[in-house]
Image (cartoon, rainbow, N blue to C red; front, side, top):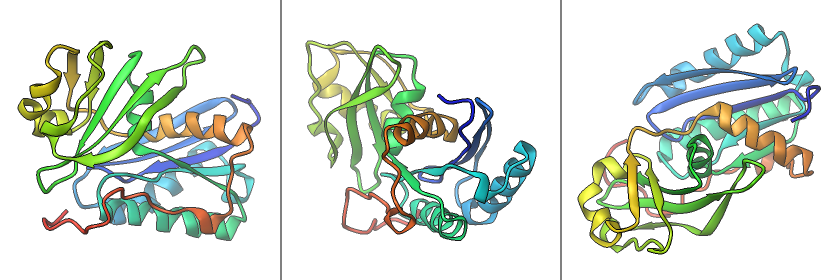
Length: 226
C-alpha cells in the first residue's frame, strides 16, 4: 500500500453504514449499525472523515465501494453517492464485492460467506486467503436456498455473515463436517474495502465514474421490505 495514495471507501450493502479514508498510509474509518438510515448518515460521515483526514475529493486517487450483493436499497444509495463524488471530482472508481470484503476482514484462511438474502435464501461465496493477505474467490457468487449450498468437505471452512445467523441449521445440513466455526455478526467494513481498493488501483483497475454499478446477483426485487 503506497503511503502517497489517497482513497475514499464506503459500503452501504448491509445494516451497517461504513466509510473509510486511506491517506498517508493510514486508514480512518466510521462504522455505524443502522438499519434504514444510510441515506441520512452517509454523506455526513463522508464529509466528517474527509475533513478529519484533511483532504478534498479532487485530491483523492480513487473511490472504492461495496458493490453488493446485499440490500438493494442500501447498495443503490452507496452507488449514487460514489457516482456523484466521482463525477464531480473526476476520479476513478473501484468496485469491491461486499462478500469479499467480509472474507478479507476475517483472519482465516478459508472463508465461506453467507448473507441473508431474504425470501428464505442466501447470497454465498467461498474465499481463500493468499500469502500476500488478499482473498481469492473460489467459484462464483450465488444466490440459493441455504440447504442447497454444498461446500468442499476436504477443506476446513470458517463461516461468516448474516446468513449463518438466519439459516444456520439449514446451512449445516450439508456442511457440518467441514465448518469448524461460524460467526454471524460479520459485516462489510469500509476499511477493508479501502485496503482491497488500494491493491486494485495499483493494478490499474480503476474505472470511470459511470461504471460504478451495483451487483445484486438476484434480479428479482425482494418481496419483503428492506
